[in-house]
Structure formats: structure tokens, C-alpha cells
Image: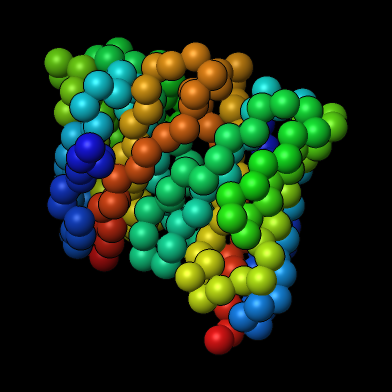
Length: 112
Length: 115
């Protein structure tokens, strides 16, 4: 079945440093979503990317969808302690845009 | 608008016992999902409903797990009998059935510990 690989599994940064997590698929994706889960919390939708090469920004967060629609990245500029959490990419699977397969996530910790 | 509601928030049971979780999705959301999230992993889909019909239950261990969504609104997920490896957070999510918009809204989850 559909698999999405995320790297790195963990990332520890000093506050103010940048952070990037990558998501890769073996198949072409119709879209990709990103979610954030704070420690002890539940996943919260961040963004959906649909177009090849698409770049979207949300304040300090930049999301990119690869030209071949097989990979995606999330970059955070100048991390803050509020950025702590696990970032998941999620891709459609089973031929349905409504059924998602989640990556294992990247746990970001920020040292103040 | 109110978010996805789940109860209970925590449950501790012994192996071989049964347990049930309840979910109330966001009003108007036709699609409802149950996920299992084991510590350190991403959510894994167990079952997907569209209104009151099952769309996908290919990853639901049907010998012990069951779920229903009567009247197309609330849903319950049951485990009977529970095993140690069922210890996880059970997340309910819902989404609109809207072409081009596939984001899912998650509830707070139920943390199940099987001893």
C-alpha cells in the first residue's frame, strides 16, 4: 500500500535556528497534507498542497510540493518554543483523497 | 464551531476485557474516521465512514474491533476482547465531503492502557 517516508525522525534545535522536515513517496501524489501534533495533543491540519512545484507560506512556515509530486518539505524559519511538536505529512491512499496514510512524523524540540 | 468530541479521554482495562469509545464529529461532516496512534508513530486508519456506511475497514482487526455510525452522526468503536498491543490513543476525525478540500479535523483522542 501507499507509504510515505519522513526524515528526520527527530530534530533538536536552538531557538532561532531553522528546521526542515522532508516527506517522500514512491508514487505520484494527487495532493499532500501536513499536520502538527503538540505533545499530549491531537493532530491539527496545517496545509494542503495540490499543484506540482507549489510553495505556500504561513508566517514562518514554508511548505513545498515537489515538481514530480512525489515529495514535500516543511521549513520553519527562526524556530520558537511554540513550534515544539511532531510534524506529520499525510498522503491519499487506496485511490481516495479522503483516505490518508500518515508518515511517522518528525519530532521537533526547541531549546530556549 | 464546536470541534470533534470524544469520550472517555482515558481508559485503563485489563486484557480480555471490553471497551467502547464514543465520537461526535463536527456538525455537517459526512465523513468520519477512527485512527489508532501508537506512541511514536503516525495515526493509522482503522475505519472510515461516509454518512452511516463503511467506506474502508481494511485495516480494522475485525476479530476484535467493531465500529458503527448509526444515523450518520455519532460513532462508537469497540474492542472485545482487548490485548496488550491495543494500548494506544484512539483518535476520531471528521471531514467535509467536499471536492478539493480533504483536511481532517481530529478530536482529543482516548488514551487506552491495557494491563
